[in-house]
Length: 82
Image 1 (cartoon, rainbow, N blue to C red):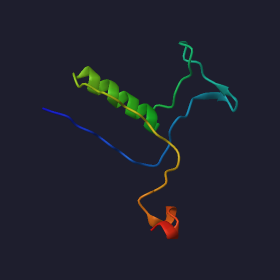
Image 2: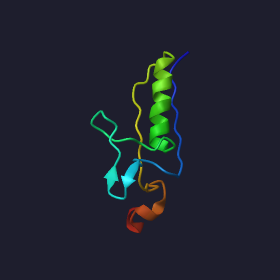
Image 3: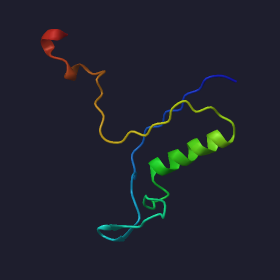
């Protein structure tokens, strides 16, 4: 028993809502909208809930989407600084 970290990096669907029509989302009855359940962000949130339900202490859980820059490469540094 001890500290742990899980990091998963992938590409795929995320942050999608169910739609009645092209511009009309399906309300969930609780002030938000129904989600597409096979999206990565939805699935990760469900996994976090499962961890907590089994007694795991989750200190932080975030979902980041969008592009990333690999700053471990010299191309992001001016040649005069290398």
